[in-house]
Image 1: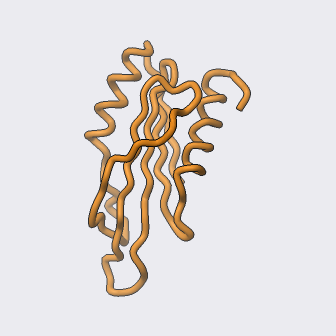
Image 2 (image 1 turned 90 degrees about the vertical axis):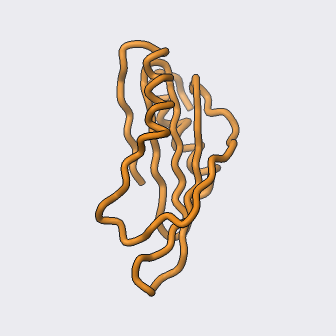
Image 3 (image 1 turned 90 degrees about the horizontal axis):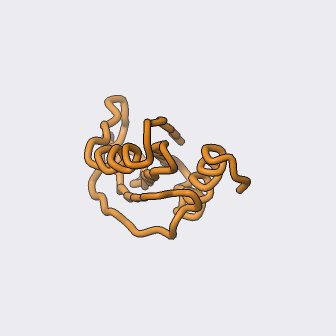
Length: 114
């Protein structure tokens, strides 16, 4: 699990940065898998999020061993913050867990209880 929040000056800045982040995600040079397919998905709104995107990636091991897996990416603009989650591993994450983590982070950023 990787979670990053970045504070920006305004809510508009956070929304614009979130859309840019969706197009500029960096690859992991030490990954032992490669992305074989990816799709943007619709998930229910996150409390406190002004804007949101979610992407599911199917990954395959580089070596001949192991099984295919899933990586979930979720980004949200929350007030003047950008939140990005990256979730992968075994067992596979699900969108309910990803949304719960994002909601908890949003509550921390906005000072509102989850």
